[in-house]
Amino acid sequence: MRLFVAILLDQRVRRRLGELQDRLRHSCEGVRWVKPEQLHLTVQFLGDVDDGDVALVAEALREAATRAEPLVVTVSGCGCFPATGLVRVVWAGMTDTSGSLGRAVDAIRRALGGVGFAPDRRAWSAHITLGRVRDGRTSDAIRRAMERYRYDALEQPVDSVVLMSSVLSASGSAYTEVCRATLGKG
Image (cartoon, rainbow, N blue to C red):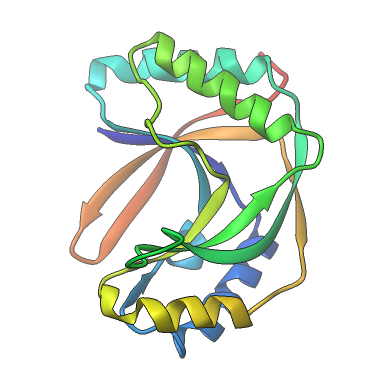
């Protein structure tokens, strides 16, 4: 089973980011946009996990979540990765001024590392993938568009993290919730 840990976005945030995608779509050719209902913040991608190990992963996630606290995040700003060269990802940012998001992510990643899922070597960056670029030749136009488009910051409470399965197909990914871990509660 292909798994990842995520923070899900509420309907209001997904709708507003969908509106941003619609505005960007006209200026950003060659981008495969994520469906608004699938927008989320990835905490850690786990990849293919044996069915027999899913319960172990879920338990590690639940345990780590009890050591984190509910928080409020701000969704604001947009940009693209990487900062130079051919653009691969168009994103919206997520922050929290308390530092709780970073502490929760660190606790989750340590717990998952303890059951054999080391975090990616790249530094973690709180971002919501809005789209993936299929044609790097449009990178300059995408960067210019990202500089032009803005939206009002949105706040969202976060009281849980979710273990999700992802099934890839020609029409895109389909996500299914495997388990939900409440922050601050067993």
